[in-house]
Image (tube, rainbow, N blue to C red; front, top):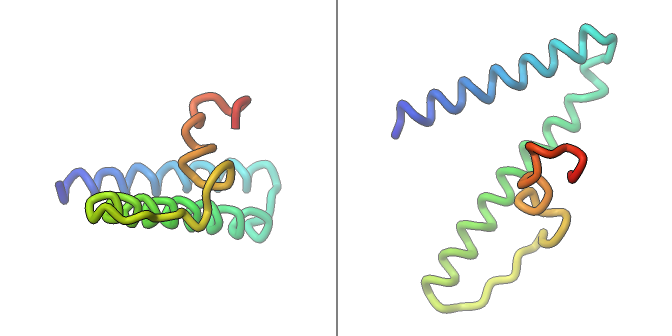
Amino acid sequence: MRKNNDHRRQEVQQIVKNACDQLNQEGVDARNYVEQLAWLFFLKAFDEAESRKEEEAAFDDTPYERRLAGEYAWSSWAKDADHPDRM
């Protein structure tokens, strides 16, 4: 599992680096996209934390209401990542 996580981390790092390189080549200053990248990573991590809490609540048979639900949750809009026109 550790090896798989390391591979996934390297893959994500390379994707982010490639995207940043592309933006830099197009003349976009890092100050214009670093904040957005940070928000994306935050939303992803927050959604994962919310999912864990939701699973734990279901296991304990207690209600849990997501703090960030609906269209703003990562899992709602990122599911169509292969179809940018739907995002």
